[in-house]
Length: 321
Image (cartoon, rainbow, N blue to C red; front, top):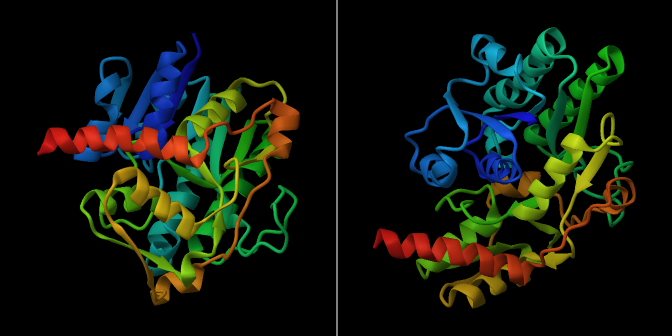
């Protein structure tokens, strides 16, 4: 039985990853900072008895030491999200997304050098793409502190792989969405935010006419790839885009949300200043390398993914009313 350590197990990606690993027979230890957070408890409730849930701060070595010492694969997903938010608090973003990754690497090198590590990078590392679709060799010129710190974390992982032989793999993740992403009022995870707003029959604002392209990646496709790179013999030392199946404009996505939910209104809106400064324009990632090396490709289209996401969200909403 493989033993996985998921740091940030209560987050959107981390909780779905825990579910997938448990269902496939892994022994899973999940680290969460605040289990009383209703989002965390709701996400982990279906597998609460199936994982070893540990409470603690992923930035503290004394918390991580005993966990890393027993892990076969480490998924260091604890951190901060959000490009605009990172510009307002750069030091906190560095602590979470820079220093946090370095601490994990140092402890794996010291305590468990045979373990694999899967680093969750971001498509925001690329900045404003010069060509589409974006391949892994595209230059990285981030438009935000968040993108810079994700790039920094990646370089830490690749350095430890070259210098100490650690089996690290980097995924540059596109625009993931799916059940349990919703946080009303939040700005990270636009699909989840729009679903929550549409459920309340609110206005869904699209900036810049909503023409900017994205490749929305359903969470099940992403967790399939995460598990795959954790075990595939060709994955260590590599960087892969984790991208959605097709290019979709922001307006098309918003209109699809309104259609699926049956309420809400899509309207044009002016760019908020902080969001405009970090906007990257069109982004569509190439997943050709993952297909060629790993045999992976995204299979869930946006319409199917939205219906599956809304089925969970709508049921949870009905239970709470």
